[in-house]
Length: 195
Image 1 (tube, rainbow, N blue to C red):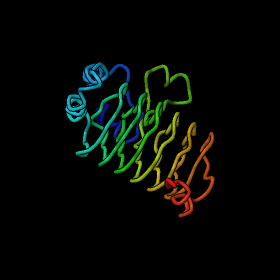
Image 2: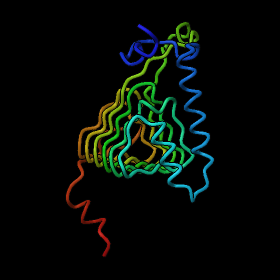
Image 3: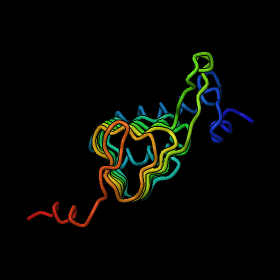
């Protein structure tokens, strides 16, 4: 089993010294450099770069620079995706994001984790667990999503939350670690309508 296969299986793998993985990350860094240095008027060029970098995109999506990721090909975006500035996706495992997902500034989505013991950590070993963000999710500013998490459809993650466990559909979560505050109800929709 090679290092990529170990990562995909959620096993410890050599992320720092494996030549194939280093090459893949360097390739992504080159594309991200081009993306992050485009002029604001070059929206079509930005989408072109992202379509060549990411595993899957919808027709309608926007990621505002700067954006950073590890590989790119492990990221799948649904339709009508929007991410504000400062998004970081450590996509050592699959990151699947549904349709109509909105991400505020400075959000981190991290599939990668490291062993607690210093010996294996100093060997450059890490693990990666996939992340799934279902449709119609809103993620507030500064949120950190940790390995192996699933965020249910229609949920809202409040600014500054650290999500280290699954989030059920249709709820508001907040805090560190993120906890369910309450369900999202029809009154929330009515309260937000312009008068």
